Length: 363
Figure 1 (cartoon, one colour):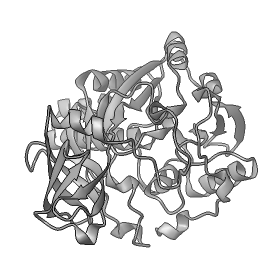
Figure 2 (cartoon, one colour; figure 1 turned 120 degrees about the horizontal axis):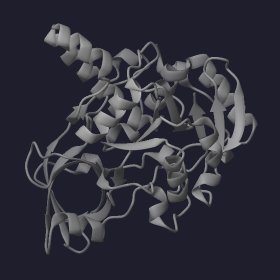
Figure 3 (cartoon, rainbow, N blue to C red; figure 1 turned 135 degrees about the horizontal axis):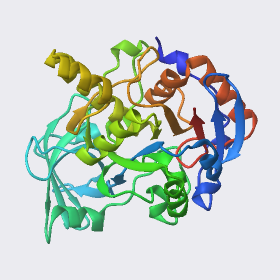
């Protein structure tokens, strides 16, 4: 499989620059995987396709004000830094970050942000071209200083100023740690979520802190040569229990966004491997009923066509960039030919694409 298999041409005017209001008034392309049929709806109509006993699983990660503008201490040269992921394995307040101009930022360099309110020391380069840095604050905690000094990062294809930074957060964002929003969830309003629950449809939350692969292009044409960046994930015991109970009762697991898919499938793989390792009759029985298990750690799972899904039955997702790992994932879920046809349909019908764009429901 080659990344060029996931290319398409998008007219620039189809890239959404601003979010629609209200959130749930965006358009929704419903794709029926078994028949290949399309329906054109409004996002709030998604309740017409949900059934009592289903479970929505959404990523509750919150976008950090991770874009920092500052200077190099000593020279005053301007720098820009994007925090990607906490690196507790290195030490307290250590982060992996992208720094520009990267070629001029060396190990031992000290950077200053917000007139010295937040300082960074460059510890080492990373294999992916970033830097591991240690943050310190002049007053209060590092987290407080980042909140005061940083700004919400928007994808490079969005050129309009965002009037309200909360519009790049889901209404259920709780766990700070992402460098980008899990954008499929941006379409939900609090009222729509209440309506979903009133219908007897459950909602559970996972956490995947979105990092470098959101910003890094796939450089190898052969997908087997692409290495995913490690991202932090968490599935609580309570959420795992709800997921397993839903599947056991015959309900569907409906992932809200590709990050929820990657979390669920990564943990489902671990649960299956653990069941196989037990090698007992009880282990075999557990494997038949247990889809996932509680987990907190990291994943590099890269989903491409041919992948066998264990945990996800349906998917809510936005329209993704060409030649991206996310487009490969949705093509794995619904089939490359069907997704290509769905994207052609969306372009022809004037759908808005990418982070602030419209959505698809893959059934």
